[in-house]
Length: 492
Image (cartoon, rainbow, N blue to C red; front, side, top):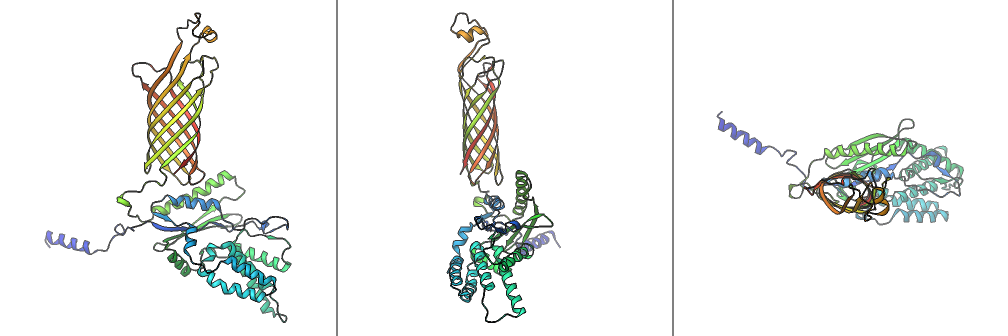
């Protein structure tokens, strides 16, 4: 075969070949829904409480993990998060679980127990169609509690057979297990229900913790796929905390995707008795590392203009307390400068921005009192910033120029000058330094760490320094300031 024929054959094969994975880049980010993280390892000691004790929150949402999942994914350009409230509004509902609970309890109080059972069981189908088991979990828990109570109190015309009694007992226990699944931290006033029903609650609670399936939030794969199709989501993140071996607690994360394989992540969670700061840091680091690894495996998306999108938060403004000390001055002992700072930053690319920072200080007296009077100084810095962003933190480095306006700076070591003033004829100190309102300029560098308490508000820690070189024709007597700042900020 000639060389030209071989080239023609290779070209034909390439044209006929299917598109590669790189060619099949989706045209939009993956639409994703993150479900709340539930703690399915509740404390058995809190199952029953005193009659006078207030009822605690029964939802059992692990707010720390839920917040971390959302914040880890919110700034990812390949992911478009669908908020849970928005998803709830997209689903049509003919009636709510709470309405059914209220009506069924009215039937129960009127001793119309069969009517209450029929009302609840008849509504369960429509409630499942509207995904109330995802969006109305607390009310669904009350619904199953009411249904279990109705079955336990259902009147019979004659004594039930052992098989019938066992079937009813098993039915009540199954309903109560489902009740706990929807509200893991549900608790009951001790003595409010009869001994038989309280015993059934205890049995169902222990069965729910150890055997109740929690992997699929919709119960089966077909219903899960239908739910994702109804909402138009590509990916569903379902996570929960459960009991492990012994006293261990495990965090499990299931990521379902309509076109990718299901991914499961399991890690041990530090026990509640561990030191709070270390426990939160370890747990969040493991979960954040897993999310980062999963995101790295996602196929790319076509971004506008073929370029990466910029950060969602572009403007950062913070203000707070500032402290400064000069590395070079004309006093025998260092003196301190206290004041405030204001920082503005605009991030025009991912990781790259520009900043303007203004600090105003008032000096304190040095111990030998060489500094004759307190003075005010103003530092203005501007330049470029380089930032690295995590889910709840942001690190930045700044480099630029610094303009330093020094106030009425006078120092001397002569006692007559200190006591009588520099205008007195006895003040003959040849080392008297009087800089007036000197202006110097030079190079600036700074490092900052920002810790986000919410999506927008953060606490900022900053360390910066400068080296002044202008005016070039003279030695600069006051130089090399080192500044630390603690401030509160807002990003948008």
